[in-house]
Image 1 (cartoon, rainbow over the protein chains, first blue to last red):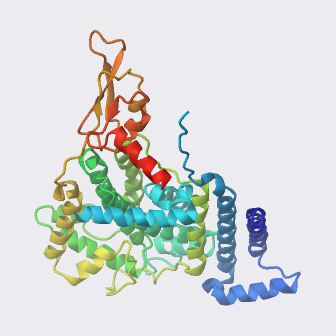
Image 2 (cartoon, helix red, strand yellow):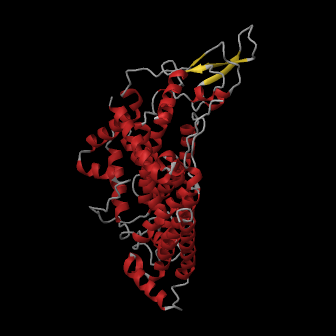
Length: 96
Length: 379
């Protein structure tokens, strides 16, 4: 299990990054609501993020919020993927 | 000495961060690159803002259709797509840059890397910090709201209070006797011109370093931008009411990263303010000579009989402290390594680079170091 854990984590963060990347154009298009889950998400964002009083600008703040999440998840995924080879290993010379 | 304690604390912190991030992504190892990265963000976001900014102060009482600095900033914020985001990125990148510079200076201080040969980096760094703070303050003038007007008047008064040069400095600052459109143009010129002058200052800051690290890895760049974007979404930037030259604002919201001098200015006589600011700046600039270590740095020494002139130590030296000179007459080799003691910091990289045991630190000979490593490895 521990051998597959890094792969699972990288896959998870890749999915998060992709999801955030898909939510970015959703925000920019003015929050269309083809799914009920998206309606709930829009309502939650309007409560949590302070810029909702100006709907024209609010879409851009939400866009930047999702972009930040996408970048963060991409960074974590890349960091996990390269973690093993970036760890410093001590190699002791063997006397021949 | 207290610097040894600070160095130990610093290294312990780095060790703890290494356990989480590994050394490849430890932000402590990119402490100089972080402010540099934010500078590029500021240049890019500033360019986009500059495209729509109008540096005039004509007020509502002069015309019915108002086009001035304040309305152009409102236009950027409320009408231009992503204008509000770019404006907030510009503001928060400035704050983040100040934090990164201060942390960078603290690390350099705690790890004792500002002495001897490195005084040029230290002094240029202090000058750069003062320039960055002034550039940030001019950014607040450019919005031309109530706060901008109050800050402009406070700055003009503080300049005027200086002996001899005060009146000339005030006239230069306002670009005339009073606040006019020429004043706003001057602020824009200072804000942009001084920002580009930073690049020249950074060249001086880097020129004595062998291999300066000025770019964080991509993973770190993503995180730095993500942090900015979270602040943009959670704390939107808005302007105060448009500045009115017929009124005198008396208070403003303080951005502690750039506007702390105004808090000092408001709380003490201007003569005391200038004395505090000038002596504080001179003290920090003179730090390499204020706290001098009693024990001298042990510089590396070349063992002339063993040196083959292979050049490895000279190439590897981070401080350009090893020069290859023609070998003495009678030598089998063409070149000989010589150490410039003023540049040497006793780091030992040359000892590791040499394949012929031809260079050593006097109080840390190879045999002792190998014995310690073997003892640790077998423990």
